[in-house]
Image (cartoon, rainbow, N blue to C red; front, side, top):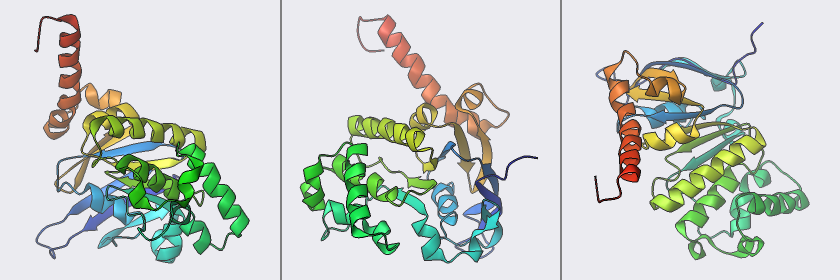
Amino acid sequence: MAATPLIELDHIYKSFDGERGFAVCDVSISIESGVFVAMVGTSGSGKTTTLKTINRLIEPDRGEVRILGKPINTIDAPRLRRQIGYVFQGIGLFPHMTIAENIGITPQLLNWPDVDISRRVAELLDLVSLPQHYATRLPDALSGGEQQRAGVARAIAARPRIVLMDEPFGALDAVTHDTLSAAYRQIHDRLGLTTIMVTHDVQEAVLRADLIAVMHAGRLLACDTPRMLLSGTADIEVNTLMAAPRRQAEQIGKLLANDSGPI
């Protein structure tokens, strides 16, 4: 008997404009425990709306979201969100709270003992490669990349099984983006997390994800491994999107083979 998927979206619909148009239209996907899923697509394709139905930041008009077979609309929304890590582009650290207080906010809301919170903060600072003395700093004393490291630490502080990421590194410079993206994938593997990440960067999806879910005009067009999607599908929108990292790889290969100048 097959195990119940950790996350299931079952025929999800969401409209912000009545029946005249759906931001998300008939999206169904099953995600097993431990899988890293990247959701890609052009702006307005429904990626973030779909992501936010999983922690009830957005309630679908129709359809059902389940975690381990249990409909999430039967779970108190704040309690559900404390069980799911959430990282987004704006970082969202509380400016008046220290880094330690930011990281420890969810364990505090869950009534962890202070000694356990302090121990967890120290552990997480090491995990995300931030110095221990940063614990007493305010967010504005950190760089953007350091703040996002703290944001990741805060998201996993209460030991969630699921982490949702909405363009988490999109506002960072290319080098910091790549460094943090790779570092998070290592954290995902080390902790056995299940991650769903929305990204506009198809190359990042190819390099980091186990599965890539391709959205277009509110619909899920494909969900498969990077290798399978790069090899081509019957859907022209999927092929167009996946052509970008393939083309970039080919151009880099040509550049390395020809050192006489730009391509």
